[in-house]
Figure (spheres, rainbow, N blue to C red):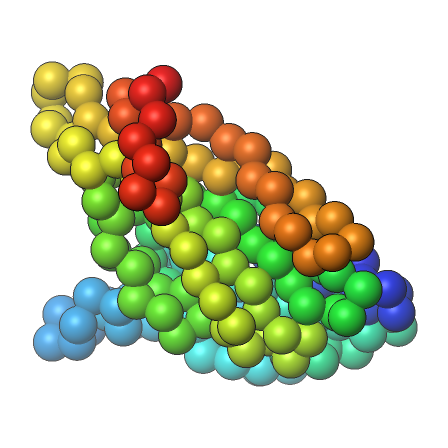
Length: 178
């Protein structure tokens, strides 16, 4: 949860599990297979696909919903910040294949870091991912894991990301050992 300069409330919450009324439709692509609804103050706002995804909301200072978005599949927002123009920056982690603000993601290994900038209306402006590329093999306990955990924006709009990585990670062509 964070506030923008106007006092609007931005929320990123992980949606996990199923509930009464969920639908498992194996004829649909994985992105759309598990379906359900999100409710805010008793109102049905947007169709979401539950299981492992992230709900993004923007509320006015009085709590009225401005917009809602849903990432799909294995993506978790770990931190978010806003700049003086009301743009929203996100960092976190995604596993294998995920979808975030219309962007399809494919991890380079088990887990990758993502950093994204969205407009005040919740539309994607840019997206970056960083990962190692060593696939995870069940049972051998090895594979690359990267997670963006913290984020800062300076007055000039420079973005700083903190996080963790194991093994080697690729940051825009620069390979960093852990």
